[in-house]
Length: 227
Image (cartoon, rainbow, N blue to C red; front, side):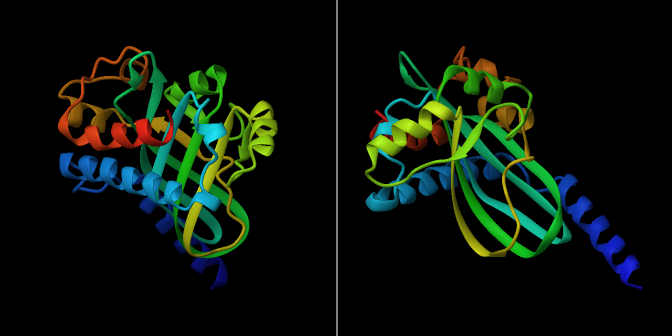
């Protein structure tokens, strides 16, 4: 009976993670941009716990995944959507749309909603993340980023890690890490927002998407906090 319960739970978790929502349309994509903008603003508003300016001032790219869902009962599943922009000569790029998924085994039970921010520290980390499929902790060195005003700590950690991670959680979950999750480009969302099929690289490096209405607020927030 116990084995059957675990098997059923695992099946539900897998289905929940891989079956796309029917309502995942342009309105959802626009909301994703708005939610990511709010998350970044709120994190930066808490000055003593915000991402240090010494980190953001040198960041090559910033990705935000608002409301990542994690549930588990022996087996854990992570699923979420986000956006990423890259710094260039003309300022921050329009965002490319991404998804994040993953699974884990071990002592874990419960559910959680997590806002995740990834600060890409150097070009190598950025090029790895821009690929069609990127595994956190395997394709680049990832470390928990420092917060507050400790510029020296920020510099030391930034030199050791290609990507710094920041998270804000709601709910209860034990034994969860972003290491092992996979980030992929969300080509469908890119097409809905920009009106044509564009890859992450085309959007953030070649800047082929232009600047449709929904992305203006996001870029303005990046320009404000990550000059």
